[in-house]
Amino acid sequence: MTTFDGNAIAGTLNAVFGGEMTTASGTCASCGATELLAQLRVYRDAPGVVARCEHCDAILMVIVEKRGIACVDVSGFAALEEPTQL
Amino acid sequence: MMAFTRNFHGKRRAEADPARVPPGQYVTPGFPVLSAGPTPKVVAGDWTFTVRGAATSPVTWTWEAMRALPAESITVDIHCVTKWSKLDTSWTGVSLDILLDSVETRAGYAVAFSEGGYTTNLPMADLTGGKAWLVHEFGGAPLEPEHGGPVRLLVPHLYFWKSAKWVRGLELREQNEPGFWERYGYHDYGDPWREQRYAGD
Amino acid sequence: MAGTALRGRLTWQQATVTGLVAETSNTRSIVFDLPDWPGHRAGQHVDVRLTAEDGYQAERSYSIASAPEDPHVVLTVERLDDGEVSPYLVDELRIGDEVELRGPVGGHFVWESTCDSPVLLVAGGSGVVPFRSMLRHHAAAGSTVPMRLLYSARSRETLIYADEFTRLGGRGGIDIRVTLTRENPGTWPGERGRIDRDFLTRTGLPPAEEPLVYVCGPTAFVETVANTLVDLGHGPGRIRTERFGGTGTP
Image (cartoon, rainbow over all chains, first blue to last red; front, side, top):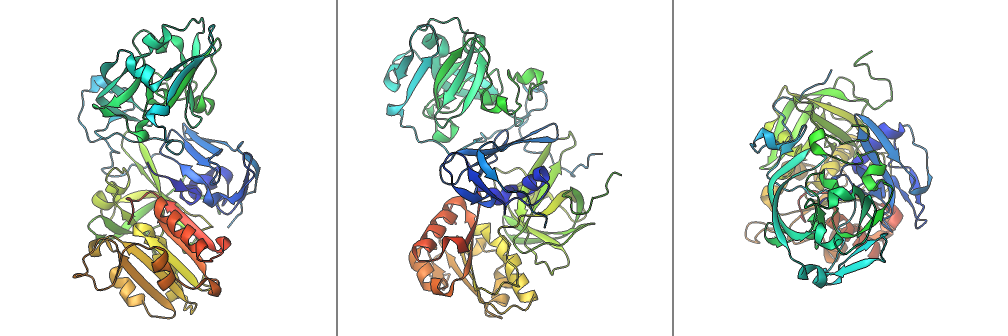
């Protein structure tokens, strides 16, 4: 099994959020740690993309693509920065 | 218009009897590892399986208690919602009929729960009647952690996300409640032959 | 209007293969011609999407191997035996073929020549790909900041960009140190063994120089190297990492 980090889903995040997200920071609602999305642990060999906190493994974000439409759940974040336009 | 990639076929390498391959699936000779999180380290001796939420108080089996029950060998085809199917996989485990026999319940549904927090929901009717097992061997060898060892659920007639890895028990319920992938829009039931991938299929 | 990309919006476009370079027996570089390329920064990625005739699609993210100054976008792809996209890209793709690309993406693991800190790059296996972009960018922009690459590979046969790195090394502050983990001393006069604490102490840039550090490779490699660098006194805030699957430990 292969673990990636947030860099590997930069394209998916950009398509979902409409801008660059790997340099945005998010705060884990579970342990309170704030990290750049580039640092998330990403599991994408699954029915969807699951991003977890680097510190406590809590699920921060799930992205599922259904019939070409991406559905994103960011409820694991207590706070999440806006995307930046490069 | 879709732009096709010349001579790209995905991983469809294995030839197979089309009657055994559900719509939209391809057959793989490998055994892809799918995971939504780190592989939990569960030592078989520390593993337990608990059925709770029934009329009776929770029932728990230890690894030794589960291994003392009659096991059977099963050879089945498995179908993953990410579109691979694997034919003639062989497993050894205990039928859930044997475990649920000692549990008094009128619940119509169950949520299987796993080490690491994963859940998936199934009707009780699909966990009984010789359709579901707790398996601890794959291909004659102890089930590897990356494939759900020491023990995973095996419900081969549904998409494979229902066959929860690292399973630790069942929560019995009167009402159907979605599990992990079901909450994110995957189909509640997940019949590969009716291609029930997403809610509404 | 179909096929018209909105400015600034990330869309898939058809990229045509104009060149192929075998780097090793299981790695090759692919040169693409893109109709609408906004330019990229060294270290950024693109997503590649392949579509089978029955509509089945597979998508992967790859680091860009070319510099922003280069005329074409180049990806270097290592074949993963259980992979789906990489075997196609390494073994099947021909000149003139088209695949879909979107990008560039990623803003974290990038280096710009306008930055005046010394730079330490640490690569495991094909984790060296984004560093090739950074090294070429350094050379093309005429930067003089020290840029040192520590590159770990299994053997001479698995080294990629060997000739180019030989040419780049020693120019304008670029310093490249290769270590091979599974090569005989008889056939390799250089460094051998893993990038461990001793190797980083001997060959890395001193923490006192406050270099920007980039580490790329398989997950276990990146975690070991990044933790060791912090132990040696490098500020965690100056270390950028990129973890990917790849094939085991290089």
